[in-house]
Length: 476
Image (cartoon, rainbow, N blue to C red; front, side, top):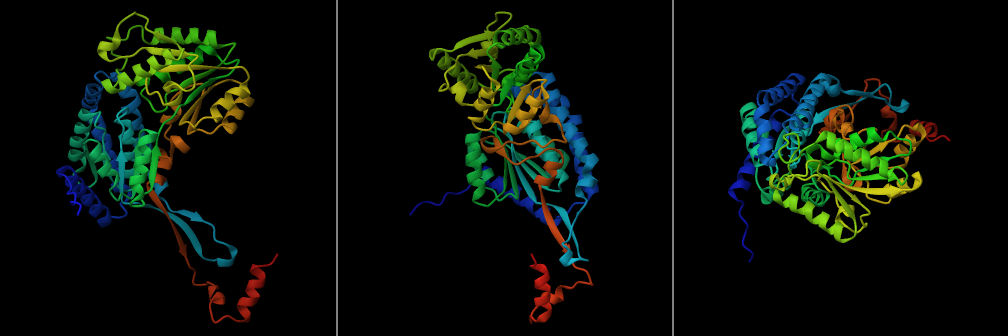
């Protein structure tokens, strides 16, 4: 007989925390707007009062993370999410009137957004603040309790958030847990009312299988190879600056970073010159530059190096843009690296890169560029650089991606009034702003019968009245 596997101490604590959250959600199934607003206020206080501690924790986890990037790409959008939700909360919570068929009037119909209960959030390591607080804001605004699993690759940030959550929210509203892969597996097996996972496509499949055991609905925010398409006639300097900014933010460790560049044959040389110049202006030095972020750990640094070695061995041209001629390896930093003529079977062309490496793909006709994008898995983001209105419209309608920025990179993600989410291999479901509120709500349909109802005509025993009514209802 197989031995019964007993839960570990970590798993037991996890179950206790979940039970406490679920009991609290069942005891107060529909928090008022005032209560939810107080939760959002507490979240804002947590962020504002601990800004430097949060910045320091993230930098410690990365080995060196740009303070400006943490404040700009994590703290600022998290606070914006809080403010946006607080400003629109009353309107989001308001029941929506719906139409009633003429056959059932004068009854009324509406949709009531109702909290689901307990929401689980699995956070990746690359943006541990923004990718935890974004879902937390949406879930709390929708009236839920929240349990967050932080990445084991950001232990300092995870430990700090666990302390701050307990201090500001107690133990029955927002709980942050930390642990390795085994705890993550136990976490995704909990019977959440909704589970949001941000991470790789491969791990997303495991998360979805685990959630299926409890029929837990999931939102998967994955990744993929997001193209930057530069059309003929585009402003090449503007395109280069935006591509460099998007690719080198967080050293390319961004799920919506431009993963590869598509450029017309006739523009390739000029555009690459502009990219080299833009990289020099942005980061004249690398190793000791506090503005440039390190690769998060040795495992990911070695992965990127191995992929570059594989591309070189396959005949690709590899060019590291290292203006000061430094050796940034000791600081676990990597220069922006251009890779040309890379075979399609190389890892750089098959896998999401998640680092400051930019493969360059040339095309002759614009249709070829669209066909190249459409022949590959649907990306989380698409970046188009073009000023031709008709061509822009073509790209928007003839490609499918999670989101699009035209003549810039990354910025569609931090627009709180736009939904964020992938499609197909890059994810499913949306959050941010109203879409996040709806994701973590049950849109409960409500039908209110009138005292003047005529439905008695359709009830047995059937007779002439219902036959007469059916003639009207089934008429051609």
